[in-house]
Image 1 (cartoon, rainbow, N blue to C red):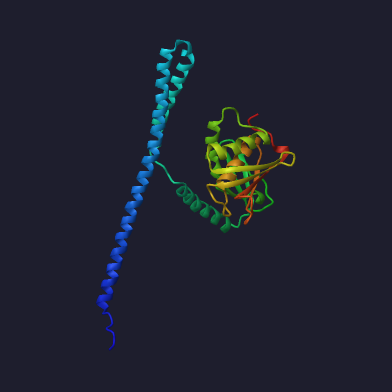
Image 2 (image 1 turned 180 degrees about the vertical axis):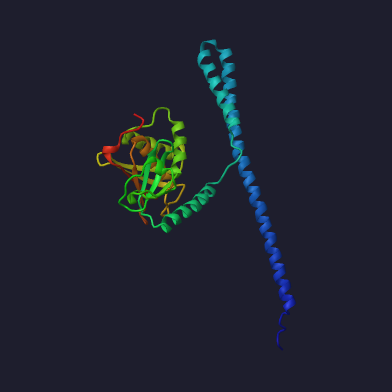
Length: 295
């Protein structure tokens, strides 16, 4: 006996049922994703609020202790003031929105893809130069030729630098590290360094402890030769032949501003290395020109 073949109507019905099931499962996954995101935000917000409550409790206890123990009033009142102030500050500065790190990286990757495509289609060189700028902190210059001259500040304000001197032609961009650097300056307790050693310590500390965009850095500085190499471990932003990687950009903008001289950067990777280094940022400058504009 021959088996009865399913009719086209039966096949179409099965497909419709499968599509309906998939749509229902997709909708459930979306709802679950939204629920988990909301739960994560609430948990983070609760953690901040609990920290604030703990600080306020310390302040209240210290204030009561100061009333009960007059001999230690000075210290206890100081603790009370610190606890109450920190508690109120923590409570009102609790973030209302948390953005996952991979969201920022995806946005960054799209922007870098566009910039890299522009550089390649214009046939520009692989040279990256961060030039200090009086009005815009610093500009990233991608020259047309590897042998180049630095354009004037006025020419650098144009995106496409086209001058009579062919060696000055290229692309001038706002560095990704410029805003980070300007934010970093707000956190400094003293002035920005003006020597390679001072800037190395300040900038690498900011990458790890202020912005937390890398887990760790290892540096190799040769001030006499005008070179700083920063080995980066566990970067929040992966490197993929980018025009202007945030880590390299931040270090270069800081050096350019502090030393007052153009900084040429090279970012290299070592696939399969065993020292957990994601990539290395090498910055070079001319020592004769490294006079800080802030002096």
